[in-house]
Image 1 (cartoon, rainbow over the protein chains, first blue to last red):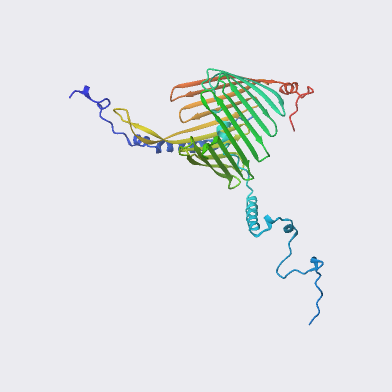
Image 2 (tube, rainbow over the protein chains, first blue to last red):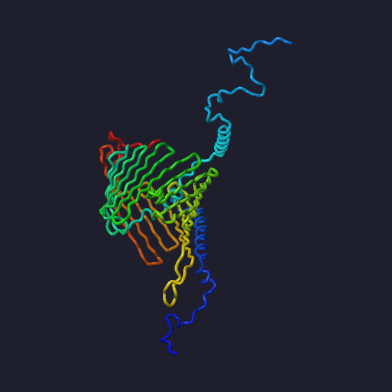
Length: 57
Length: 387
């Protein structure tokens, strides 16, 4: 059978998504990323690095 | 049989009390029937005990739910101040107490700001009135009236062409260790007695001197005969003992979780962090035909880190978020009557950028204010900083 009669997008064999790709599609991924960023942000704001960013007038 | 003295019936004060029954104290004699009868007396005692216990906890007012994360979302982050295109503000202050000020705003190339807007503001110790009108004849007004230091009534009205008009009535009560707020948006009662509109009631209660918990209940009915909707949101706020950092969290009824953190790094530097997660439903499309075949739960989130540097003649705000946006807002006072505004945003993921520039003129409507703007008192002497 000729490939011209295939349904669009059905020609290429579907690649099996990696475990990380599968996890990225779940709602838990944005929750985990943003909570991690929040914790990292607090650690940064409370760190001496932030104190050093304040001008010594 | 012993002889007894005759009872002094003419003078009741000389009659001895019945054993086991003590006469009323002065405080008890002053009480009315409503406070001295056994039921109300018991309830009053319970109330007084609880009140004394609350006093012993040394709780303070936790602020309002509206201002729960004010330090981050209104003071530090750029979003509230951001604009695009060119903008000019001409402000004129006529007097300081009571305050009366008018403002003309001209804007070009902005998606949100109208081309021209006029606003007037009046404020005294108890009242605050503000009115705005723009070139699309959209009119809005606000009135805040403080009945005493604990009670504030607020009314907001908005009329604009092509959009439904809005009326919001609000009552704020600030207790010693809690805040109550009742709000109603477009309230109306039909002939059948049905309430339509939105009604919101909220309470924020201090649990310890640093920690507060609160909830907000929303009741809404769009049209009479339609089923009503109700929801509850939960909030929390923690202020550090030194008041140098604040954490606040909100679990909103629409499925959003907002957490924010604020820190005063130095006298003129503040840093803020805000994370929001929004749960929702998205349609699943058929990969071949493209028609929706179902729905799936999705969660979208964004984290924004911002800082604010406040100097004598300029204020700088900068922020960076997890969606790839870097933005800044700079406000610099060049002259006592002229400020320059600059804001810019670069979206690295979408390859987009926005830019805004503005001028802000402050003119004085009276001789006294003109002298103050130039750093002089009404007699022309230099103003002295209070010691």
